[in-house]
Amino acid sequence: MTLVKLQKVMNNEIAKRVFLSRPPEPPPEYLVNDPTNSIFVGITKLFGAPFSWSFANLTNPHIAVVGITGAGKSYFVKTFLLRASYIWKANAIIIDWAGEYNGWVKQSGGKIVSLGKGDFINIMDLSGMKPLDRTKQIMTSLDILTDLGNYPEQKRLTEEALEQAYVNAGFPLAEVPDQSKEAPTIKDVIYLLDEKVQEGTYQYPFELENAVFRLRQFAREGEDYFAKKSTVDMGRLSSSGLVDIDLSGLPDEKFRALAALFILQSLKEKMRMEGWNAAKGIKAFVVLDEAWKIAQDERSDAITVVREGRKYQFGLIVASQNPTDINEQIFSNVGTTIMLRIKFEKFMDFLQGSLNFSDHIRSEISKFAVGQAAIDMSFQTSVQFPEVFVLDRVIGEIPLNMYSITTVEILTQEEMVNPDIKKEFSFERNDLRSRMIQYNIGAAAINSMLAALDEKNRFGDIRLVVEVLVRHGVDRNTVIEWFRSIGMNDEIIARLFIK
Image 1 (cartoon, one colour):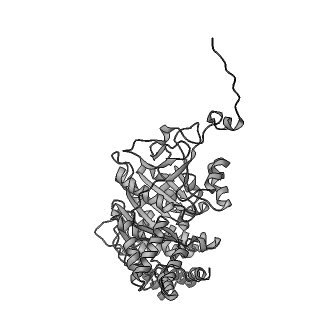
Image 2 (image 1 turned 120 degrees about the vertical axis):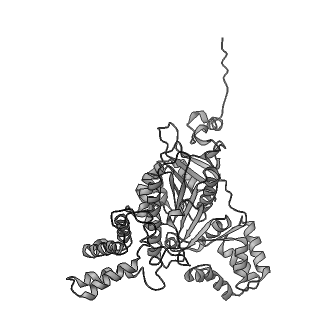
Image 3 (image 1 turned 60 degrees about the horizontal axis):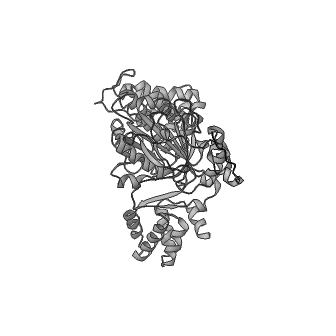
């Protein structure tokens, strides 16, 4: 016979008992994966379970990372890429809009490709593709980046000139190219169009001249970054370990986007040609950080990589402070979304509407400290538990002597969402020291600044840097010139001193 004992229990005691509600966290078997075939990310907030990421039971290996500047996006990406190289020997190609990863990749023993600072890409290089296919890709890029799509006659003239340039260089248009032959350049295409202008017989001379003008912006002396022989072997890029393609030396957003589109197009064709390899986990991750111009357009090859990447063992990592900058086809098809701190309500509305998480998770995200994250995973099969859970923090392994300085606290809302404005400046310790010595900043001031940043876990506000330097007698003009040397906008520098 069972005895039943009555007991008085207070409401607050009942509330602590989790059997009354489903805990907002997947069961351990979905979080704790084989350490030899998964990437450790951090510890869950609710039950303290170690979370290891694996794409084996997800819809695909693609990842979206969103959060305000300074929330930990690049910290997560760097940690993830390092561990992916350990576990799967995965390569990584970072399409680096602002040069943010340059110092870290250099310190990690990776390869730096600095477009606009000595490296060139010939956008007519074939990389094993048929000339007809490359022509279509170039035309798509011009459609995305210029108004060419609004002028059918100019579009036809440009496409015909591209094809003729390949023919003149000895390439059959519909055949796989001879790798020993050198591809033509945009300058050859412009030459063909100029010849037609000089003949003076074309019935629409204005259309012809505008077609020339549109291409010439990418071939002017000093800005012909895509009209010279390539210094980059695109065929080897996806198997070269850790590669940072630094686009910060290019003059504007249009140039950076053209480079990024060409790289994505070449990588897409490379993965199609290589096919599946049963011995490999992920062959390569491609990182797009704040690349809104190409992550937003539905014609971008970023969308093709998302659709086809899994079967070719390629993963795409898209990072942005503004989730609405990421095309819906990308955002809705990534297997994992990492949400760090989100500041603006409209961004939170977009995420909650897209991922359908609870108000509890929304409240948690708005209060996150640096490195805390909410994770959404799309599993291949239907599951009976919440797919969004909170990570206490990302446990990373960035080299200890990397320092980051942020301007986020002095930026306007418009500047915060402007991808052309750099918001974080990262340096290896010795590189930071040498840069400051070049501007005759004394050892005492440098040491004090480094010590102040050390107290902030090597991540500090730009105002802290100014206060320390001025306190040690560094004059204002020297500080201004040093800020300019690292790429800081003059308007932001002026506002900094006013504040």
